[in-house]
Length: 252
Length: 348
Image (cartoon, rainbow over all chains, first blue to last red; front, side, top):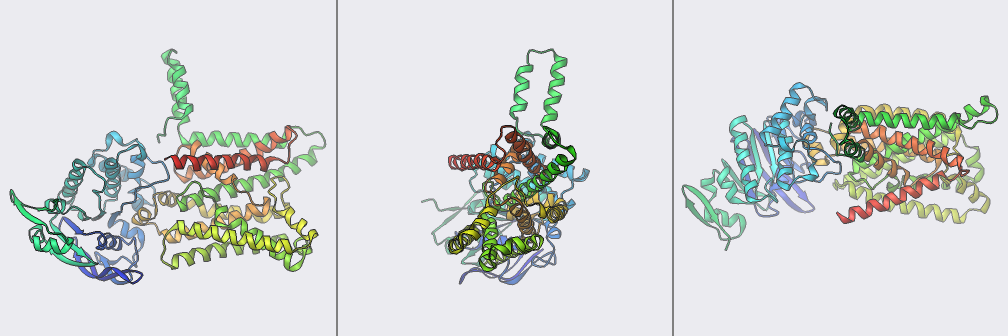
């Protein structure tokens, strides 16, 4: 369980994450939605200890993220931010191999090699395993980074807008994959999403943020309501039910 | 580990096509072997050893008993400089995530010049000649370590966790140090200025041999600290977020690496003076030649290429009767590489 207790992060005087209290990781896939600047990515970075907290406390399975050793946390939680620019030329297999770093201080044993191959296979990357990352498309590269996180073999997986710059097919594939991870491996996925319909279609729980605070939290059915979404995005959103699934219409 | 098909790999394949299958098999094996970083490193090591051998033993006309130890001292200095510059540049490029930067950009060499200028300015040219050079060197190393440490803490304390800002601050400090030095140098009397200026010019042959002992100790110590770090350094190549996500204490590791870089830059600047582009040259050649991103391969490759450039280059130039021109040639070639890299970066 991830416990966020009155977490606050300020940039100058603006609180980007303002006194947030949450319990995360109770269900398979949790989606965090909100407008730009709502604090979704910052919250995710705070949980993944990529940013230091200004006040409050975040615990993962009882371990304080600010005080626990890096490699202990790295075996518990994997975090991927939108930062895929690399100066070095790596192959997909090299990159996925880095996921084993927390388990052997860089030495890879037989179990580690098996985990790498499994992660590559899980994301259908076998034909690309020897390719260099800069030769791949955006979607393929995104999958390679997710494979690295998978090889890390953690209970929690935090993803920051993994659908950015992906076409529809690849976006759907990534979301299906996250569902599969949750179902087959029991991974608890927390994912920041821009598209609320992807959240509605794939998440078990949706957390909506605005101005650094959580303003709605619950299963898709309770969050996917016109009055809630209008408050989140400041935009009239018509929610319709199509074949039992709620879809937000906001395109015109 | 596979690498991109290099020129070495492509050429024999095309030539081997009409050959008998058995011969082609042998050639393919050679090609496959050449693609392995270990084999490439071994070849570099052989080339470096050959450079050292010809430099020490070829063309001795007088007494061997005098010439060999004399040349060995020169080689020892060049080896130290090759390690110091190669390792410091690769490490620096790893923590900044940028392959067109070198420690010189952080203002390290400018600080060195400033310290010497201050000493001459305050105590006269005699001070530089009479102070124990080992003591002088230790003071310089201390100043550089403190400088880089303070800079780092200062920038990070403002929660700007950006290495680019750090480098920018480094450039500004470099300009400041250079300007202060230049102001002080203008106020010196001409004799003192001449002594001072003499110690600023990069020269791979006119090495200050009194510092060989302490430099060796420093280089060995830094190497002993750096070797266990190589795998963590590999992770740093993924950038700060990924490194933290994979459990590397990013801030501590970067601080430690900066201290190592400061010590190594002190070694090379004290021995041969400031060199702007040599590090850039060997580091980028190393990435190109070794075909692996791992520091276990790139660090030794950069050092070996440094040895080949310095010792082999010195030998060749001496054969041409241009013994003193090595730093000019290396800086010229390095400068061209720098410009090419800038242009290529712009195209992308």
